[in-house]
Length: 318
Image 1 (cartoon, one colour):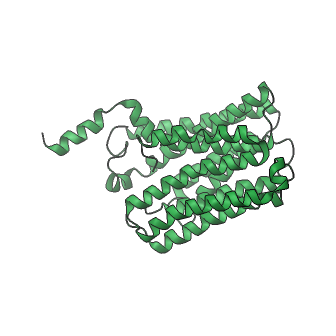
Image 2 (image 1 turned 135 degrees about the horizontal axis):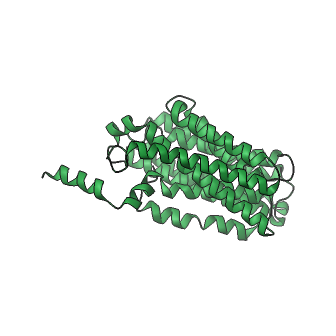
Image 3 (image 1 turned 60 degrees about the horizontal axis):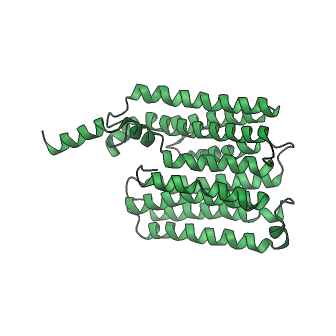
């Protein structure tokens, strides 16, 4: 048996649970949890059992919808990955294509069902409607839009809808602060997705530079929050410049990682920058949560960084 054959055999006979964790990009699931948790906390304090159950249901729904999206992404990309990334679970044969197809659709339906349950619990239809729109956006991105110029916009729309899924339990209609935060996160992910479009090969410096500018535009939208929200924590009401400073520092940190990839756009450096940008989303979510709920809940969201980073050393997030 040759060395190549031995390597392929190891791929096929590795631990089954690890294969499925790799398939669903488990480190990235924590960013979906952070998005929707921030959305819930932004509009609703957790003051009782009902609110806690709603939070748990929507976090679970978001996690399942995200997992469904990455599984179906690999299903639709099977032939492309077989050429460019044969080590992935589907082209390597570790997960049968039919199994992944069934798993993706099952996760998608389960996510919408949990959102429907949350809608029944709060007595309003918005969570179910937003989850349905998010599921449709996920399928459209995976099946049709990913390789088109609208691909990054569609992915940003998915993230925006994920934040709005959490905000769907607001007692009133969405106001400008809600749209600003959801739109800022969505715009940031448009940039991250554009930045990652050619991560398997040598990327264009122009593309990477423009994508970084889009990310910075998303952070700039978040920076305008004090001008639109009247329910900020007391410290930010008195000193909104602290919020502006925080967003500036985060923008500089993220921008520096991206700039290094622009200077030398080899796949390894671009992929490292993408991973950093994805994990930085947790920090942006925690910051938005802090702006209205204070330190405790912001720290709870920030703690999601720990499992995301630990699992990221074991399982690739891109």
